[in-house]
Image 1: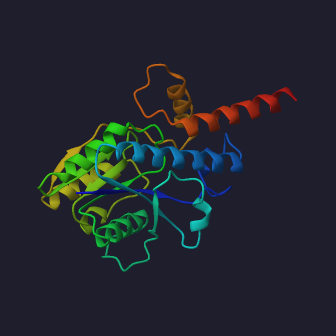
Image 2: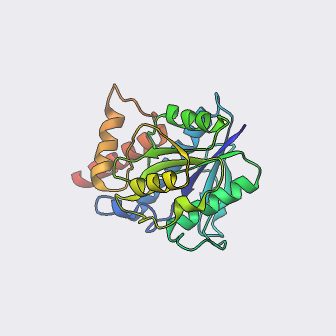
Image 3: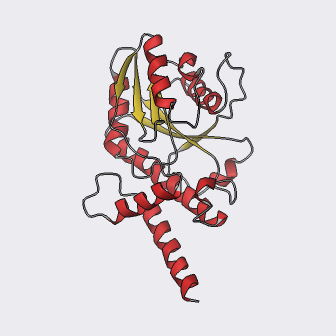
Length: 243
């Protein structure tokens, strides 16, 4: 029972990556941080897979950018295109098309359970990933939700690609998790929730990430590539301010 977990991601390109961090980072710095996030999150999946059967993926869009992930991802991470280009049921719009596309492709590849995972939580506790795979290995129909503190979710896991869970969702709002819970109940599925965690997608959450990585008693994943990247950015800023 191998659980596929796919990080939903775009290639780290200056001006197109982590754009909500551009008030405090240059476009090239935001792209470098995005690449560090991807490396840490794929390394985190690899760590979780050491004790639970797991297949790590990055589900990317748009097409034609596969080479841009070269050297960024942890060894053993596979790429799948999930741009929402497949025919979709009515009501599945926006980012929901990409999420459902990723699920459909991974189930079609033979995986018995699939999780979609955000690309903005480099310190997500490894235990949450293990728990998701273990919960989906149970012989019952259920959904596993990893709620984000901003009202969205960082992970959604299923044993079938239920299109209803992606229908009529107000993506990129604080209503996403609540609406998804409603869809799970409407589908008659059991819902199991993981611990809440945070996304790093704006200056305030970036400050929180810096504080977490500097703390001696942090509970999340160590995220060494992100830590190194932030240290380099801080060093570059100190030199620029001193000039």
